[in-house]
Image (tube, rainbow, N blue to C red; front, side):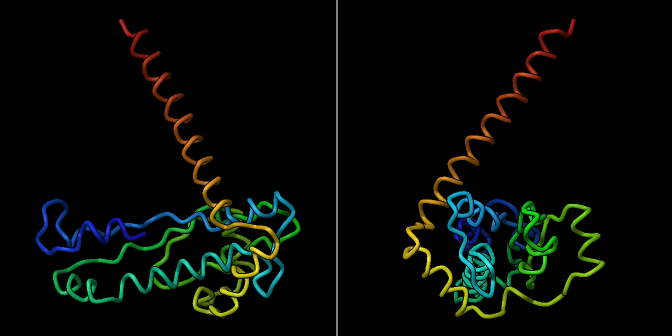
Length: 187
């Protein structure tokens, strides 16, 4: 989350003009929960499981990064925050609310990728509120409970990052091979 911030910490640094740099950094908040759920270790709490708690803590870190002294030096030069991008906000587990991840991932300066069916469901019966700012202490409690269940969030997220990188490489290799195949068949 902080890589872009570190690279832009000096106003006038080479690269994209600071006032034009308005981007979103992806956060797959549902995936840590899926990793735990596959192990049969979903944490039940007011948030129901750790994905929302994980997202709430990531959002708190985001707010801290974009409110500190370094940010106060950049903002007068036109710097824009890098919004958090919540990925995979559709609910795959039919036992959960069809709008769960959309409802639990609402906050200022965030963006969500929402499948059309989930967006329709949210329009129909979703609750719009700044949920990422709610009960941060409860989010800490959920995340602190994971080790007692023999769940290492570092191990879960590390495995998910590893899997994600592997899947990205495999998809890129397939696309590259397809392009090479078309180029070799071109007269």
